[in-house]
Structures are given as C-alpha cells and as structure tokens.
Amino acid sequence: MAARSLKSKLPLTLAAVLLLTVAVISALTNFLVNRQFRQYVADQQRTKSQQLVRDIGRQYDGEWDVDALHIIGMQAMYDGYLIRVEDGARTLVWATEEHDSTSCAAMMADITSRMKSSVNGAFTSTETPLLSGGALIGYATVTYYGPYFLSDSEFQFLATLNRVLLWVGGASLLLSLAVGLLSARRLIAPVLRAAAAAKRMADGDYRERIAVRTNVRETDELIASVNHLGESLERQEALRRRLISDVAHELRTPLTTVGTHMEAMIDGVWEPTPERLQSCHEELLRLGALVSDMENLARIEGAPKLSKRPVELRALADSALAGFQAQLLEKGLRAAADGGPVEVPADPDRLRQVLINLIANAVKYTPAGGKIEIRIWEDGDRAGFTVSDTGCGISEGDLPHVFERFYRADQSRNRISGGSGIGLAIVRSIAEAHGGTASAESAPGKGSSFTVSLPKSV
Image 1 (spheres, rainbow, N blue to C red):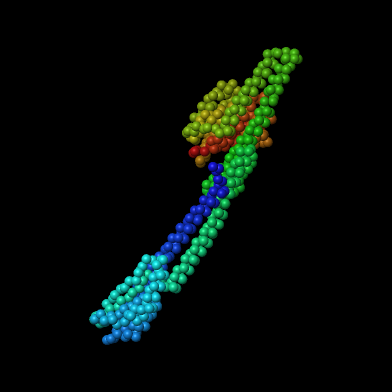
Image 2: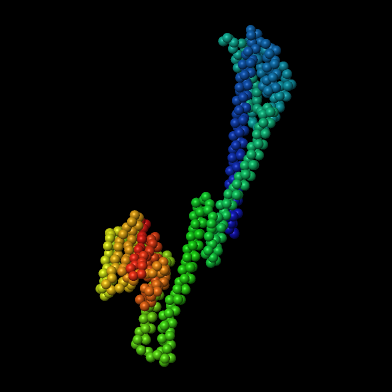
C-alpha cells in the first residue's frame, strides 16, 4: 500500500476530528436543551396544577360558586387539564368530564397521540383537600398527562429550536472545516518547503534556504535544521573544492622540481650528484609533511571528536614550551610562560597542538637573541593564551589572511623557511571546534602576537 502524503493526510485527519467534535457537541447541546426545556415544561405544569387548586379553593364562600368553577374548568380543559370538585361530604360539585365528556375525550386523545412518540406517559390525577379557616370544605382533583405534555405552541417552539441548533451545527462544521483546512495548509506548507529543500540538497544544490518563520516551535526547529544542514553542506563543498585547488597548487611545485631533476638526470643532461639527489629527497620530504598536515587539517575541519576535560592552561603551556628547549638554545632565544593557573574545558591533545604550532611559528620567525612569551589570561567567561614574539612581524595587508590555508606572506611566510602554510589554519580550526576564536596582531619589524580565546564553561 502506497504511503499517503502529509498534504492530503493531515487535512483529512483534521477534517475527521472536527466533524466528530462538532457532531458530538451538536448532539450533546440538542440533548441538554431538549431535556432542560422538557424539565421546564414539567415544572410549569406542576405549578399550573397547584394554581388551579388555589383558584378552586377561592370559589367557596359558604357555598360553591358553580359558575366560576365552570369558567375555571373550561379554560383548564383547553390548556390540557381536567378538574373535579367535591364538597366535604364527597358530593360532586363540578367536573369537566361530567360537563363536556366529548370535548374531554377529544382533548385526551389528542394529547396522547401527540406525546406517544416523545415520552411514554399517561394521564395522572392528584387530589388535594381544600381548607377554609382550618375547616375542610372539599376536595379538588386535577388530571393531566404526565410526566409532562407539550402544547401546540410548545411543540412548534421546540421544533424551531431544533432546526436552529441543526443550522448552527452545520454552519459551525463548515466554518471549522474551512479554518481547519486553512490551518492544515499553513502547517504543511513550511514542511513541504523543507522537504523540497532537502531534496534539492540531496541533488547537490546546497544554496537552498528557507526564509519562513511560523509560530510553531517544532516547524521552526525543522526549518532551522534544514537551513543549518544546507549551510554545513555548502561549507563542506566549498572546503572540498578549495582543498582540491590548494592541493593541486601546493603539489605542483615539488612534483615539478623532482620531475625536472629526474628527467634531466635520466637524459644525461645532469650528473646524479649527491647534491641533486639531496634536493629531490628534500622536496619529497616536504611533500610528505604537506600531505600529513593536510590530513590533520581535514580531520579538524570535518567533525572533530573532542575529548574535553578540565585543562590547566599554564601547565599545558609550560609542557609545550619544554619541547622546544633545544631549538631555543640553538637560536639563542628567550622564552617563558606567564599567568595562570586558569582552567578551561578542552581536549588537551588538540590544545597542545595549538600551542606547539604557535610556538614553532614564533621560533621560526624570531631572529637570534629574540624573545618569545606565552601569557595566560582570563576575562569574564572567557580564558586563553597569547603567544608573542619579537620576530619580523607581518604586514598590514597580509595580517587578515594569516589563518587561511597555504597563505604565505611574501617576506616572512615563504617556502625557504620550510612552512607549509597550514599551521595557523589548524590553530583556527581547533579553536573554533572548541567554541573559541583565534586572532593575530602584528606590525612589520615589531613582532607578532597570536591569541586563542576559549569559553570557560561548556
């Protein structure tokens, strides 16, 4: 069985729920209104019966006023009530059935026929003693259809009320369906756009973005996730393209050098001297180091798995600096760490790699007799370290690009110095993977300072 689309399933489901809800509410409303109305009619009939008894009692003043009883009885018969009045000795004074038995029978038959489809009732009689001055003066019996009966006007009112409720229910249903379908479409539209955007991303178009905001948190989160996915895929695609371009550019020079040398020696143009073989060997070593740096950077820029734990920055800086003692002595450089102790949640191996890259960079470009300083600092919810040197510095035009892959300043970052152009790119990638930043300050001839800022909490 083929799966149904959300576009058709949600409106149908919503319509079914609304239909059931409106139907139940309409039926319940009709039931309650009818029950309340019938209860009202029954209460009115009991009140009418009691009123008839009081009216009959007022017609005795030493003797019964038969003419008044006749008027009361005939009016009561037209309203659906039969009365019977007896004196204290149980002698009949006046009775509707005795006065007009034909009309009584017709009235009773009409009421019975009218009410048999609505309620299973019957005519019941209630006898009430009549007192005057505390003395018994007679008995009044009132007969009517119970538990209740409806007059023609009441039947008409109830039928009209039911029709109104039916129309209101139908109008409510149509309005609810219209609002429900409109709401369903508004709910579905951004989901369909997200699905279409995801499909285009699957086809290789990573530029698609959904510029829609709803008032539904889950839908907004879905849209944000799809947009984030597009940005991530686009960034990864850009990295992949740039990586191919950078690798092709960086590999071309050593491969060309080795190829030219080998071709010249094979053709007999050059003698395979140790110096020329050493030159080829150095190019191959540099090529291997470049590939290793590229692999490292690719792992960091992808989705690095960080094993974070509390790291004390001063201790880490001292440890990293200790690994450069031989090079510092060889060049006559002074180096020291200052500040701390300060702890940050970080991957110690990755953070150590950042320090090693920055220290190596400083050692490489600081002339003999220079100074390298590692300053540990903290500021509010941030902490980090700054590696400063008294080297040749970086020009203002080159400074914004020093963290880019394979970028080399003309004067200080060249192949002769042995740099691959990836070390600072690795520094920035590791810092950003920790939720931090990497920045640089420098001026030609005044040295350089590289700062890594990290959050003090996860």
